[in-house]
Image (cartoon, rainbow, N blue to C red; front, top):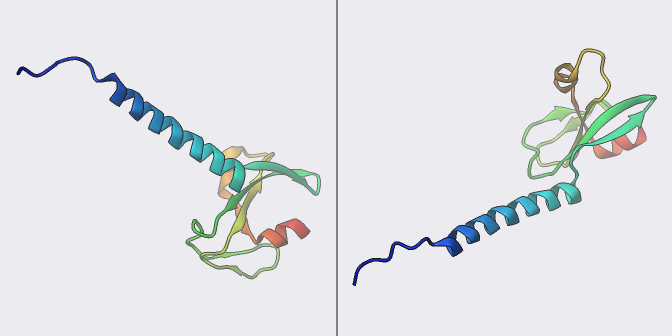
Length: 105
């Protein structure tokens, strides 16, 4: 019996559904675990993003307490949202804070 050359649309749709499901999961994770948000402190705007414990792989010094933010510790990355020298300069000056230290600053 000869092979059929008809299109296999259900397979393509299944692939498309998997891609959409993965995108939905990323959006859900971002909303649950924190995407970048803007906060105002001391009259300035800052962008604050959470870093999960599994994503924290380097050691940093917290500017709030001058202690180490160890690898495997969830923390926050903070940078100015309204800097004078542009977004690239603001991103270059981002700092890693303990969550508690940022809350009390």
